[in-house]
Amino acid sequence: MIKIFNKTLNSEILIDESADWIQFTPRDYEEKPYVIIEMNKFNFLHHANKCSECKKFLDSFGQESVDWHISYSNKIFRLDTKQIGIKGYSENEIKVTMSDYNPGTKMTLVFHNLPNDKVELHNLLELAVVNEDYENACVLRDLINEQ
Image (cartoon, rainbow, N blue to C red; front, side, top):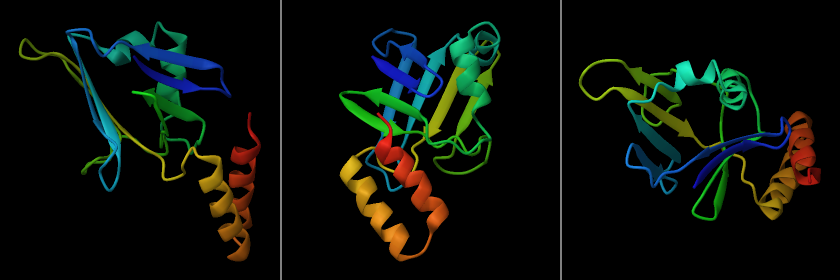
């Protein structure tokens, strides 16, 4: 089961990747890690108009956030929602195809460069303080202190 969630907004989207109309392709080993979720004959944008959880997720794109995560295969990664629709390799994209041939939605979701591991976050915090990057240090501090 794929879970896209945001603890701050108390929002959760569950996607059953074992369904025959879902194709899930994780690329967490790439230099710039990402996942691709393809949903055959499913219009995610139309669905998000009716589903408040999906609408919250869709509305988060274009805003810098460290609150959205994706979980699969006992792994959790932070999603980068800063931008969407940029052309390029492994960039956020939600593409809906409405045709007789292969209709559906293809979502490419890029991982945020900030890790989930508290030890790694603490190391980054120390480095940010040494470099006098206090704005970044505050974000890291808040991530370390969140429950």
